Image 1 (cartoon, chains in turn green, blue):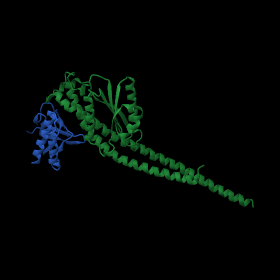
Image 2: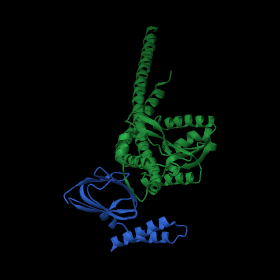
Image 3: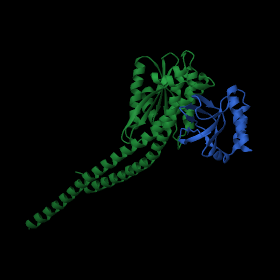
Image 4: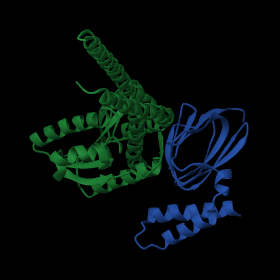
Length: 292
Length: 129
């Protein structure tokens, strides 16, 4: 049985923890609103980019001459995985969920004897992956000291990936991130960026897309595809940051509630042992008086 | 010229402009191009230059690169470097010009990159006048 003093100390410590988690929740809520707004504003760009690429790829009749970024190298040996996580913890299962999905994929790739290359973006993912997959990690990108992520940051990463692809560093590229569905649910995603995924064509649409290209299709694609990769990465950034804040908000909300429960429980304990000690003292006094 | 079409200028961060316009002049990669309503479907990309929009009011944008699609009387301009001309005037243009010029003197520049940089310098000089 802990003493009254111990209980009092524990209650006050839990209360101050509760204050911290509450403050973190508020901060996350404010940041979430901003991040969500940015994610929503960023969507039209990547959606339109997608549409244009779909239209362009329909116009290409001879896949053997098409840019490699669109159709792939024709091989399936080396896989590059870009795992995008947060730089900060205390956000529930956010980082773990991405890593879990990535690890599952890594194991499959290793089992089917494919070469694996990993780029980590964000420090938390690196921490979780470096023990088991450290030898596959070829690059660690750290954005910790960036206050706000801009398109330029995404472009930088995109350029590095395209460069690596041109040097025949890999055949397929995937990015792992959390898609923001709503505040309480974020879905870890695996998305293939190289070669670009082309959806099955609709016959109706095919008739409509008789585009004029200036200069020709190939040159436009050459210009557009690297941009598309940057765009996809930027989209993943935005979704990720909204998800991170949402996840943190939920986690901190739960923590605050749990701390409240704990305080209630401890207070009852405290009161009970206080009462017990008073009763004990009374009994001692009374039995002392009786014995006289 | 009373026929309108939709123009959407979209950057990764936001939708800059979405309205009905009469005509748009874009600095397409192979030269300037004016787009009016009922243009045939078109996909092209941009070099550095000035995009002029004429609608209920006139506006001008400076672009460095971008992708353009026209279909169903909707013109979509996707660009990560598009800024309105007023806001770029406030920036230090001469410094950007100097930087671009030093870029131009590098040996390993491809012809395409040279073409793009020289157009950037030309456009900025024009703005700076």
